[in-house]
Length: 551
Image 1 (cartoon, rainbow, N blue to C red):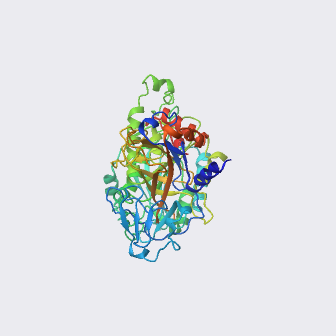
Image 2: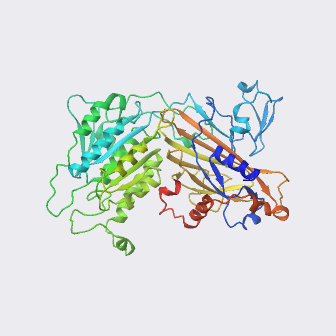
Image 3: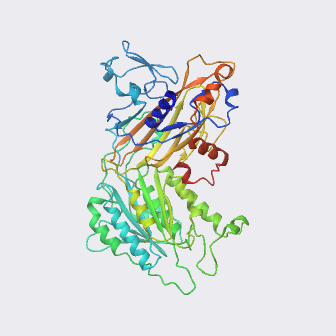
């Protein structure tokens, strides 16, 4: 590789970002000549074990419509203790705690090697992560037994302070209490009724827990406290350390749904109602706190909200031809139900995982938005007793070198860029927060019209595709040697409970098409990722996007 290629490769490895173009056209006219769009793939929480532990608040630009974070590309006057924002050119004073800085004693955020840096906000503690298991009991004994073994195994992989809950469903939906001693106790809901969060709250007799405010309201001040003191866990969601033994016994005692199944009929399975109860339970207790709803299904929903087929085995589940001919009786209503649940779940910062193991279809097409919008896993297999499911489920709880889960929760990604650029949109496991800004382009790609996106769960490999538009006019040339800047601010809840803010700031040179347009083609690193971005741009459909877009 040439020296420049090595430099770009080092930046990509350090920041977890790859551009389609590493030199950018300096005007809108030049940008229209690009075959591949100006875009990049970004990993918000790429593994960086070398990052220093920064346990203080980031320094923000004082201009209200900017609020960019101090980074190595800012100009600094060490004598006057001022810094100039590289996005809006606002002159900002350093806070008092930076009084001792100098060219020889720089804070980490000004060092070139830390173009990506992570802040741990110690005074803004969040609740520990929440895991809510939603288990289908309408399957044979062998399948249910294998699933129970996997669920019991997973308890040993969860953090001891994590909150956990259990919901089972067949014809009815049961929400299990975990704080009872001596006998198991559960609340039973009809599987044919779609309940609101308020109704669930009243029926279960629970109150809302005071938790963190929505992050989108706090993006201007990342250091503000966002969480109240840890409240006691209520009886449906208990810390693993307190209910490990009881929950292990409870899972071991689970039986097949007792409702009789006549010859030639399907079991009455209330998947949609059970998922609605799970979403409502978390919504009325731990909104805007990291949580995973983990749904395990062994067949299609055959009654109630979300139904995709009736209980008569003579009537097969809809096929591709039925969908094409608009002959799928239950599809539209089921999609509407699950899409509504997906939006509620994403709004509350929770995610939904779906583990579907059956020889026939289970209605994943109708449920897909539950995973798309929240970033959850969708796993499809033949049997819960297969190594495919067992190994995949175990990998969900993989841990890093510190023994912490390799996942993050309730994240918000914000993008800031130079005035010569505008944000067209993003493609990935997220939903738009509809935050308007002068940086928003009129041309929308993927989820556009915003500079902030909600990502309910993140893993080190989670990747977001973002698209940009060059808006600088040809009549206003950029000074020679000028550079364009993009900053990514990811706020998320760590599995340890802390609120963290990872900031990545990148810079690339502008190219003048009249003198050195050849540098653009010479400096680009053609890779499979560029083809991926171009493919997503040409084929992206909000209704058909799947989680593979972000993996």
